[in-house]
View 1 (tube, rainbow, N blue to C red):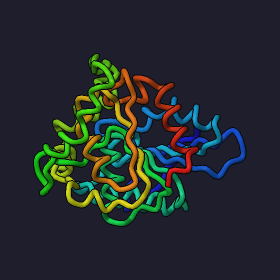
View 2: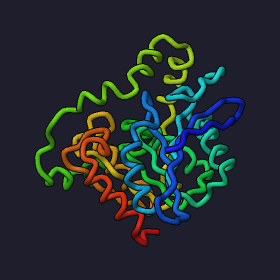
View 3: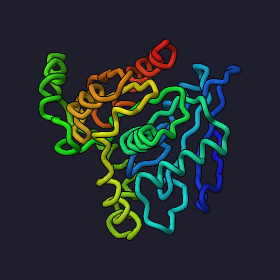
View 4: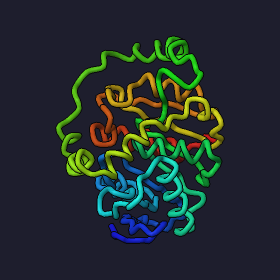
Length: 261
């Protein structure tokens, strides 16, 4: 795994690149969530590189080894950084995978018609306000969520690793003016009305036990995003690729190798 740096909008960004062990032009781009960093993807992208995929994992501004911006950010600014990052790396036909807030960034790019990806994968993504946006979310949930709970009892708590992942970022967010103000901004960025304008094939992968972005949100997203498909990972919470890595990898590879368009 090669660690690299690049300057985007006067911010030094850190990212990791892993080339496939076989000759391949398939590219996967990974965006981590809030209070996290690219290291959460390391085990997954190592295995995917052995399956013929070139992988790129970006530390978002202020996280991991990337520089903290001087200006307060919102999701538009994060999304613009990702857009320019992909442009500078000449990545246009990749599959972009976003976890939690990383998924919100992909949603932002999609509703602003700035997605240059072939497909996107939203993993336990944020981005919806469950009681606003002009959409009768409760009615939607009643219609599409009821079958979900026939899959069996949802059980278990989040692993302690969740608390450790990005723990320093969480502490910093409590005392840093950047993180405090930026967090207030991003929690206001919701896409209930616009999310139906996403045209890129979208795969939703969700931990069945997720309490942070609950399964109701996944069902609403599938209902609202055209050309989308939802898959649950059993015995997994908000980090399904850590809780149940084998099933997550199998589900992701099935989507990547399918003709879902």
